[in-house]
Each structure stands twice: as structure tokens, then as C-alpha cells.
Length: 431
Image 1 (cartoon, rainbow, N blue to C red):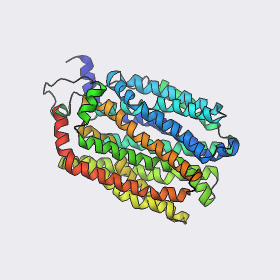
Image 2 (tube, rainbow, N blue to C red):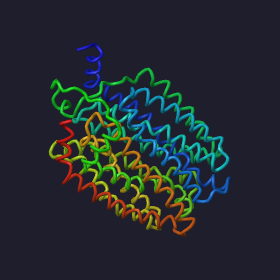
Image 3 (cartoon, rainbow, N blue to C red):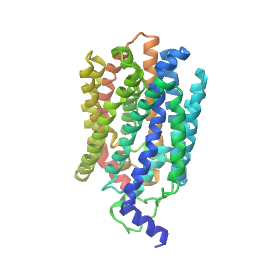
Image 4 (tube, rainbow, N blue to C red):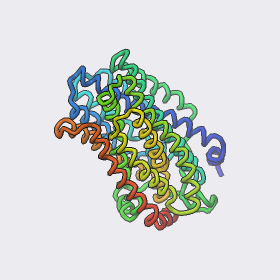
């Protein structure tokens, strides 16, 4: 075995594999802080530029739809190029674009910049999830990915809180300059410490090192789609992600405005409160979900997907309560409970997918699933804006109605876990 192979093998079994999760945690923090910051200053954009809710919905959707439509290409890139370069290059690009947001003054400026930011950020998850999966085998993968997932929540809270506070005191554009400069600095710092791992050849070799089976190269998109069409659990996971992201983006996009309009909170408090309770609770739920999923996966095929299903089912009634209640304290309790349930779902979005998709196809699979999920997210942002402007729906009514979507998500995941996953996981292990 070569020296480089020895080094890579030691890295995947020692402390460094957890250091990798830590380094990627900070990158993902900026991935979400940068995209969330704009939502916190929607009221200021409405005041300064007279944007309607429909126009704000279009601005919100510009990021998610560009992110979604470029995701399959990003997945192919992650399966073919060094992932360290993809991750750090993406961080530099989207951070610079975040800084340019401060110069926007018209609607088309915001749409263009948000779309460009979505293009930059879309490369992160296919590359980083593949990166982590090559440092962590089946015995630690859910825990590693769930710990990484907590950065999504921290970044969401951080971006919203920073933008809300700085917007209140220094103007809406100030936070974008700070976030952009900090992200570029992080990319330079981590270039010296992040090391590219060897690509794991198969799920089979995860369990039996030295089996002699060779790694498969990345396959073209059309053959990949043909294989995916014969994997019903992966299709169910993607459709569930569409629904879950629809709901998530309704909360992320409109909750700061909802708290200001319904409960009279100022910009800084609404920016923090709209994310803090849900996202902090989601951190706890994600860590618990990673631990639970690794245990259930050892006992039954589809154990990770079943964990997701339980989270979606538990979250639905609290989503309804968030929109229905008139009491701020009940709202806080409902947001916290929804966050815990959401964390159980989120912790296994990618680990569950990796159980039913061969390693050589993971980057492409994440890219495609990201596309489907974020098309749903963009639709959530835009639908609420349209409902408020054209159909006279209140934000309370819009939030309440998304509980039904979460029920549908739970049904899809239960079907995948109990019916499709056993066969699909076996087929993935043979590729």
C-alpha cells in the first residue's frame, strides 16, 4: 500500500475524521447564514424599496431555484473533481457574492445576486456529504452527518440574528459585507488543514475492508437516472425532501415578517426569535436522530429512513399550532417542539439516501435530491408571497396549511422504510 493510502486510512480511523466534521461545520455555518440573512431584513427592503410580498417571494425563490436547477451538475462535479477544491472554491465564490448584495438597489439586482449566490452554494452539499462519507463508514456516518447538520441550524440562527441586529442599527446592507469578508477569510484558513480522502469503493467494502472490490467511477447522468428509477426508496426520499423543504422555506422566509406583523416584535427580536427556538431545538433533535438512526440501522434495513418518518409525523401538529395560536408563549413551545421533530428528520436526509445509493453515485444523488428539494423550497417562498398579495391569505393561514404537507412527507417515508428500503439497500451494497 502506498504512503498516501496509509495516511488516508489512518485519517479515517483517527481523530482527524472528526476534525473534518468540525471544519466543514464552520463552512456550512456560512452556507446557511449567508442565505438566511436577507429574509431577516425583508421588512427593511419593503420600507426602503416598496417591495410587495409577492416581489419579496420572487427574490427569495431566485436563490432556491438557481440552487436547485444547478444541483445535478454540482453532483456530477463532486463525483469527478477533488472535493476539497469544490468546497473551498464554492465558499470563496458565494461569500464574495454575499458581499455584493450590499450594493443592490433594485428588484432585478436582488434577483440576479441571489441567483448567483444559489449557484455558488449548490456545490457545497454534494461535495461535503461525499467527503464525510469517505471519512466515516456505516458505523459512524449518521452521527457524523447529524453533527454536521447542526451547523445548518446555527448558521440559520446566526445569519438571521446578525442581519436583524445590524439592520436595525447600521442599515440593511451592513451584515452582507461582514459575512462576505468572514467567509473568504475562512476559506483561506482551512486550505492548509482540509485533506482530500480516498473515495470509498463500496458499501460492501465499508463492512469488509480488503475485499478486493475496486472503486467504481462516476457514471453519466442518464444512466444514473435509469438506475434511480429502479430505486423506489430513493424516489420517495426525494419527494419527501420536496415537501419538507417547502415547509422549511415557508418558515425561514416568512417567520421574521410573521412575528413582526402578528406579535409586533422589532426587527432584531423577530430576526432572532424566528429562528432561535426552531433551530436550537433542531440541533438537539439532529444529534438524537443520528444516534437513534445508527442503532435502528444495525437492527433493520430502512432504520435511518424510519427515524425521519417519526420526526415528520411528530412535527405536523406543531406546525399547525405555530400558525394557529394567538399566544406568544404557546408559539414558542410549538416552534421548539417542531424544531425537535424537524431535527429527527434532518439528521438522516443524506445518510438515509446513502444506504440505498451506491458510493460511486453519491455526489450525483445528493445533487439531484437537492434540486428536487430546493425546487420545493422555492415554491414555498413564492406561494406564500402570492397568497398574501393576490389571494389575501394571512401568514397565519399559510403556515397552518403546511402541516398537511408534513403528514404527506411522513407517509412517503414510512412507505420507503418499511416496504422499499430492504431490497434497495441490498442492491446498493452489491454495486
